[in-house]
Image 1 (cartoon, rainbow, N blue to C red):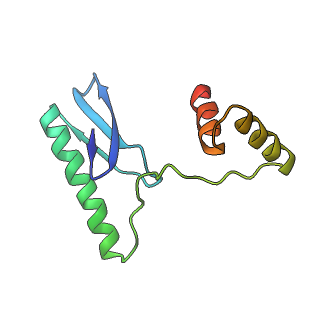
Image 2: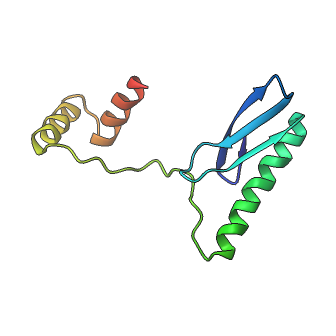
Image 3: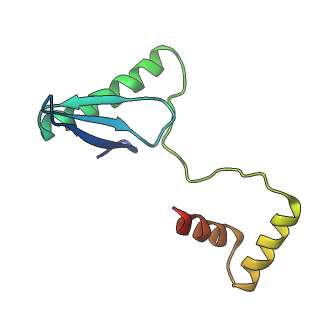
Length: 105
């Protein structure tokens, strides 16, 4: 499920007969639940809106969904080797690293 860039993962609690959801693409914790899909979806939207309102009231910037950018510090020699390998394969450093990370998950 997606809403305003926030993505949720949903699970089922068979014993209680309800769905549980959690926003997964931010570091803060946003959870919600419902007894039907429509109830779950509405709870998801309301939870995201509540979170955004809470942050606004506290004058804090809400945690935003992951941008797709992150910094990794590595040994300079490894950086050089990766750069050379990417060039040999006719790829940018970002493309080469992204392909390697994708194949590892």
